[in-house]
Amino acid sequence: MADSSTKTQSSNRYIPINKKAEEALLYFKSLGYNNPYVLANSDYNVITYRNLFRVLSNILKANNINHGSLHTLRHTFATKLFRNGVDVKVISELLGHSDIRVTYDIYTHVINEQKKKAVSVLDNL
Image (spheres, helix red, strand yellow):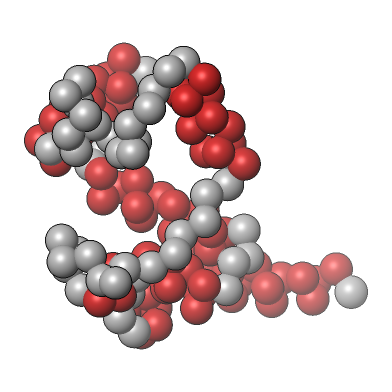
């Protein structure tokens, strides 16, 4: 069943988590955190975008990292996947883009880097 709170139908998708994320979630659970939402306030309600942005800003500031947004994290996620050879179709599906061309248009610079890297392999032959 589709979640009516999502922006589009493609927003309802399966996104696996990596081992580090799984370990972090299990750690929180071991501390007694028993909330169905990962990002929740002390009343067990979903945290608002504003509060989440404030928390992110505080984390960045405390670690001397230039200001970023939640969308910056999404872009970094996609860019890291590209740079590690993940197929554009898989990345597009993880991001929930309605069409693979959207992914190509947004990440053209990274795709071009990958093309240069691919061709440079021939220099070693």
